[in-house]
Length: 107
Image 1 (cartoon, helix red, strand yellow):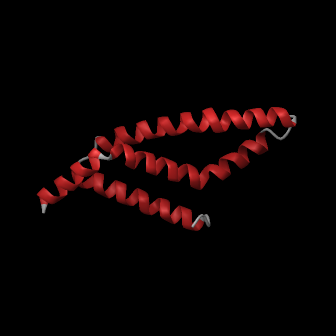
Image 2: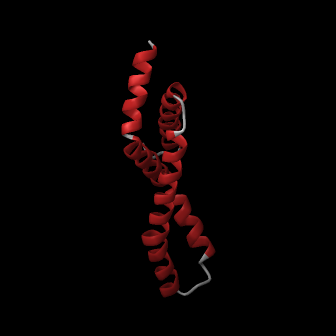
């Protein structure tokens, strides 16, 4: 059984970039509305053009920076895991995100 676990973990390691992007993108899709709502709340006192400009900066630079850094950190964390924990963490992360999406009425 151990060779199959090692082979599957190696397969996952080859695709860690796609896995990390998928996890971070799903996380941002589920909680992006909450982030935008909070941002709207804290910029409510600004004039419309100021809020609009800051929202554009948040969406273009903020989300891009946040996702690139989260993907990098997640890849480094996952790459350092042993075979069985790697498989378990990836499977658990997708299952937890599925439950988060379900409880948030995103699916």
